Image (cartoon, rainbow, N blue to C red; front, side, top):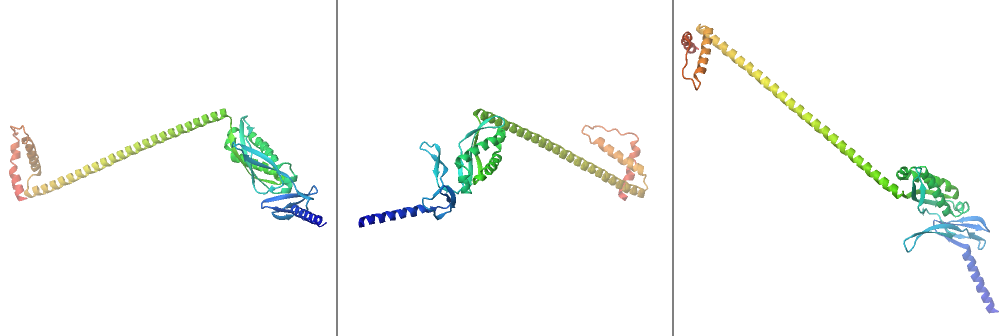
Length: 328
């Protein structure tokens, strides 16, 4: 009897421990559990130590999406059932899908979506299989957005597409207790024939821009060269002009000085002649005659000099010149 009592006591202790362990739930930070009591929503457990009624309260099972890499370095998406609800921001990497642009070009696009569960109750009860629902919603929204754009717009407007997708998904998942923070398009892969045509088009555009730049450079070079030549010619003409002006001013000044000198000489000679009471005309004629005679007799080939008969009257005035210079 004692042995039976001991066994029963041990069983009661084990049962109590099991019941206590079933009623105690420790929730890590950034996680939560949705508790159902007899099949109905009861509460949401917060981080830390929580107590529930064993065998009456139980956590709600939900689905999660995990990406795993196999031995062959292949990416595999696995859907698992769990009672843990992760409240951190999560990333879903969706596989590539084919979409058709407005100009009927089939393109492969894969996207990333960053979202966070903000209301665990809605995430559990408002939608079945939340990861699958988000994936399908992203795919259909992506087809709708890309279908409104041409291929060139799709390739050059990633930020616009990301913003539109983020707004569409955020509005649609709001009633699921989910906040879509960001959507990113990873790769946009057009068909091979389209890529080749685009490469040829880009090469032709680059060549056209290079030719335009070369033409602009040659044009600027010609303009600068012509402006330089024009400036050089202007400077040369200005220099010649200044030189001519200075030479003319010099010649004019020389003529003025010569005239002033001759006038002064004549004035002095006239004064001296008047003082000796000699005829000024005779004096001037004699001086010119002497100068001319000097020029006639200084030549290399001069042998004989013939003097006119009338020169005797001029030479007779040399005596008077002698007396004139003596007195002066």
